[in-house]
Amino acid sequence: MNRDSESLLLAFCVEQRRGFDAAAWPQFSAVSRAELAAVARYLAGVAWYGNSAALGAVADSLSGESFAVLVRETGFDPGRFGSLLRAHLRHAGQPVAA
Image (cartoon, rainbow, N blue to C red; front, side, top):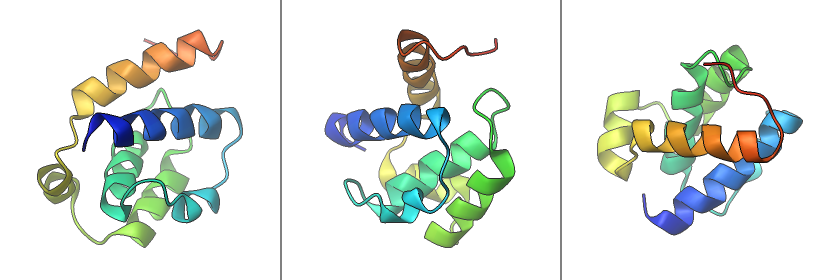
């Protein structure tokens, strides 16, 4: 995952946390489906983002691959992405639990 994809996904995730729409995920074509699936799988597994069950279903619809395979295929860095997303959410005035 390059920095451009990461930035696009961060903005999309901030927008989605404000008003989640599961149908918007497969329509988001600014990044690859594998990158989108990796982010959806990651967010489905963290309590602080919300919509875990819906995000799990979104990830399943985007890719049948496991999170580990998606991370390897895309170069997704969950630690980095999580830290950046929390910072973006705080900046957007959306509280983030510790």
